[in-house]
Image (cartoon, rainbow, N blue to C red):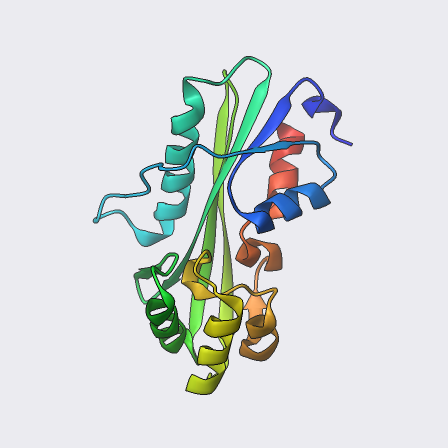
Length: 193
């Protein structure tokens, strides 16, 4: 579909099955790769809205010295932010429960940073989506955490899962961004590459 990409071997540097599924939906051939162990820290004084793009670029940097002339690396990082607090992936089930209690009944922002990198070019961007959660009972939260084990998801939830059906009152922005990859914006950026 995107003839300008035919010369590239596209690599999605992500362990996320959701990102792999979403990029597949664009019908762009790619190979998944993952180095693992990439430092995802960021300066404490950095504005929270800049953190996902900073980390996406940091992930891309980890691949920079091994990239060949015809490879294109796509990296991404998604965070949930509420009241200047960053919600990444929960470390355990009790932290997941606590995150969902804090998001219950509130509006939060999901931000995904994306970096597209080749040997001679880099572009990066962010996509933001506001999400309003209904009030969740402790029973709902416990059921979700025990049955869906959302430890690999920023903010401890997947909008495409059961909790999205019962908790999300509205969103303002890209649904797919909340899943972890703003595919509309990514497609537009790839068209320009």
